[in-house]
Amino acid sequence: MSLALFDLTGRTALVTGSSRGLGRAIAEGLAGAGARVVLNGVNPARLEAAAQEMRAAGHEVLTAAFDVTDEAAIKAAFARLDADRIAIDILVNNAGIQFRKPMLELDTADWQRVIDANLTSAFVVGREAARRMAERGHGKIINIGSLMSGLARATVAPYTVAKGGLKMLTKAMAAEWGEKGIQANAIGPGYMLTDMNAALVADPDFDAWVKGRTPMRRWGRPEELAGTAIYLASDASSYIAGQIIYADGGMSSVL
Image 1 (cartoon, helix red, strand yellow):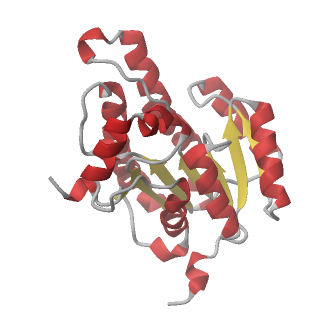
Image 2 (cartoon, rainbow, N blue to C red; image 1 turned 30 degrees about the vertical axis):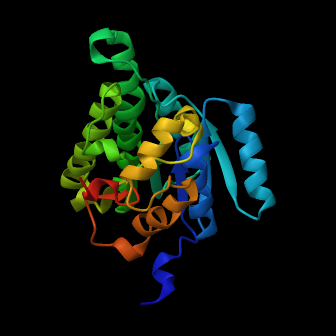
């Protein structure tokens, strides 16, 4: 097999929530494979700082600051990309939030906030990208799910439901858009060393639980998602659609 199958030169990738964390690592991976990358976030200063760092490493990087929970802002962002003749070939729906509280104490507003940020955003951004991909007859959508796309844990119900829904949204996208040349797949990270999980990493009991429960006996590193993202974004996965690949150190495979 030629490594040219993994080459993303000439393609443009939009990665939501990519100024730091998993999104930043995925964006760097795609850029390293040759893609021009559009970083997204809600903090323009942090976004531009990330872009400058990636440009200094030799990558072609643009920015698009918008809130993925604001439909009007999403449509406006794609309109600006259209005006600048920037066609998105690869979309990575990565943006999301976490909120921990027992369900009996959970307010509906907090439930909805997590669902909107993790699930509805992927539908709206995905729909806007797919409308344009369909016109061109090709495109790749990668939704960032979670270990929680298939398993549950107490106190994170809205996140679990959103990530489970994202798994099925991926299948729905594949079912409806496959004939238009659009491939939709997902990645399900396990417990990763990110800012979102900083408090858990610092908790000795939780840290021990993660390491004891994971066959690889460690947390995942954000950059360990890059290879899977490159694969799903490239021609190497040309007949893969509607699937979720778990990058979880084996946690979902054991009791």
